[in-house]
Image (cartoon, rainbow, N blue to C red; front, side, top):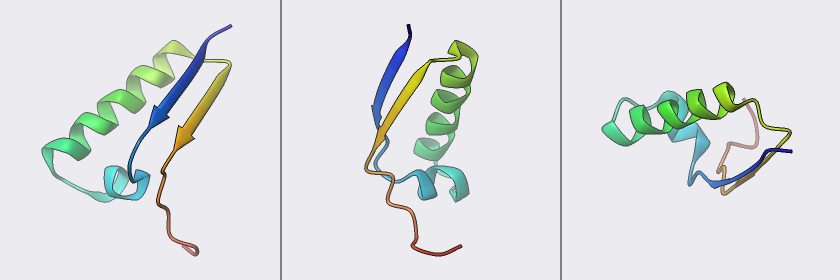
Amino acid sequence: MILISWNIDSLNAALTGTSARAEETRGVLDKIHALNPDIIAIQETKLRATG
């Protein structure tokens, strides 16, 4: 079983931003996808209530 826990500190910024941090976060997301984990626990997503 593969379990990944990640404190992302704003998924919204990572998905919509163009900063170096946003690029790095997208790289981590690609790595997580490649690992095909059974469970992913993501903390501090900071998503908007709507949209």
